Length: 228
Image 1 (cartoon, rainbow, N blue to C red):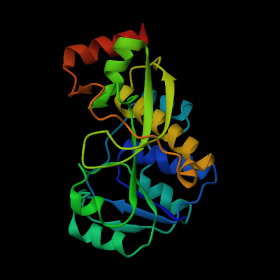
Image 2: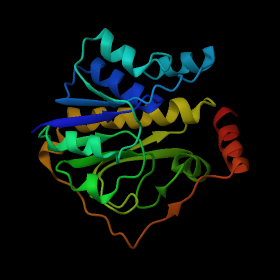
Image 3: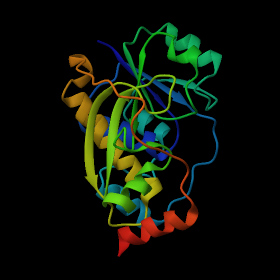
């Protein structure tokens, strides 16, 4: 079985590649979508919190790859549906490809060969959609992550693995907590060979709840609930 990963330059990809290296997990094909936009600046407190959770948010994905002499294929865009990326994936012969971002997968890439794996920060089917970790923090004081096989619908694919995390005790929910819980679940899946075992659970697409980008007031309430 061969596994690939499509990285971007965001915090999520930083945590993914750093955690893979820490756990000595090798990925067969690494792709980087890099549109060369300036990297976001992070406060010292944010960087310290990321280090407390197992990754350094101040180190770019390119730095991590190059410092560890990791071979990768780089594209100068950040569009998961770009035809150049799709043609490349068709030729690398991977069974599973880990998705980290870059848009909503359309039919052309979903059917180009490998099964795409997503780590969604919500315990499906109860939390499908956007910014689910905030809603879950408000409702349940925790957040679940679901690893699943992507299909054409939103967060309805076959479930590979699920894990519950306590709510954070800091305010860096978007940059640190989201990346932390997803990357920890990624390591669970790969260390335990869940992809190889293929014991996936089908979802009932008619059940559950779908959420949309959280209102700023509700987001603020969730963050206050974390730090108080």
